[in-house]
Amino acid sequence: MAPKQKVDSSDTSASKKRKAIITEVKVDIIRRSEKGETATEIGRSLGLSRSTVATIIKDKDRILEHVKGSAPMKATVITKQRSGLIIEMERLLVPWLEDQNQCRIPVSFMVIQEKARRLFEALKREKGEGNQSEEFVASRGWFMRFKDRANFHNNKVQGETASADEKAATEFPKELAKIIEEGGYYAQQVFNVDETGLFWKRLPNRTYIAKEEKTAPGHKVGKERLTLLLGGNAAGDYKLKPMLVYQAENPRALNGISKGHLPVMWKSNRKAWVTLAVFDDWFTNHFMPDVKRYCTCKHIPFKVLLILDNSPGHPAHLDDFNPNVKVVYLPPNTTALIQPMDQGVIAAFKAYYLQRVIGNALAATEKDKDLTLKDFWKTYNILDAVNNIADSWDEVKQTSMNGVWKKLSPVCE
Image (cartoon, rainbow, N blue to C red; front, top):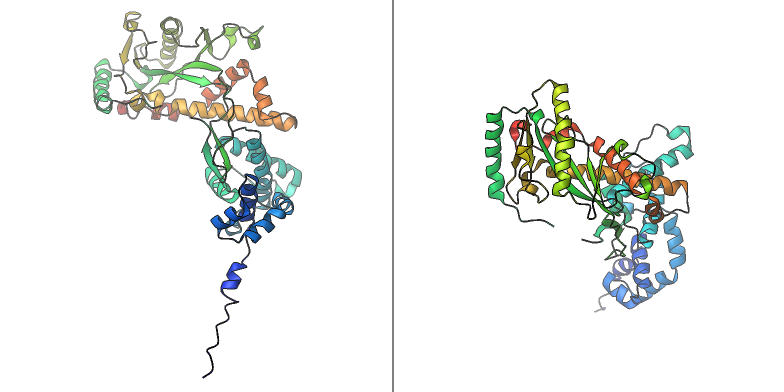
């Protein structure tokens, strides 16, 4: 009896062993090797032979050169929706991101979004008339797909939530509704203000790095802090002029500039805090006269309800200043849950501010190719910040100012 013939598996298992290794894996191997992993360790974790890994490492210069000139994407995610301009823009965006990480400069979603727009517009101008009708909005959806294609992920560079009294936050809106009804207040007459700290020269605290990088290189955080008092009425049609408290009364950037002509109310003290004295001055000399003018313009009675949290900087005797202004304080530990300015207005303002500053920075670095983002921060001064603060506050929409009253006082919507 003839022996059974062995099945030739050369077309099955052998072919599987010889299957092509995608560029993404090759780049991963090279980066892991540069970090000190041996070919044997890398091969074991990826299911590859040591010799295969060693060959890829030996050929790293050619592989990286190829990657640099290719679209940073997995072949499986190429879609018809992406135009040639977008593909080319992404090719330029990835090395820019890698450069920022190498220079230890964190980049957030908005930084990447703004840079992508600028690269796209520059390519469109360069390519000429045939591409003028093409649009690119750098949407979050595009970003999430790009992030996967380029093998980047979000990483925390550095890192508060006070315990909230949910019961008090649930009961207080009923009390406030009664006050509004008994006082006959219109939504235009109900106001809220809140303080927020702003590190006006701080880089984003999250950055996008290659997935194989477990931690982002550290960077020195900009500690130049100021305090803002932001607020407006429940109707959303009147935003109060921002009050800014800075450490210095006369910083060099404001030499020769009248503080009365600034788009913010300028105050100062050593710690850049809203103290009792600062708040008293704001309430008496700014809030009451400004709101009185607003009410006169709107042809409504000068009768105001001001809602404050129980911050130490808020005096307890404000009701004594003017019989037409009633002050109501939120219960302790409810600010995060129901205070209107904390339900999205301040966050929106800070997002607008960051977007503006990023735009300034990218414009400056594109104009001067030798200028880095860190160099830009060195030239960015408090007057630049003041102008960006005013413009960012202007960007906060009436619908946002009104919508944040939903939890505290639905009657004001």
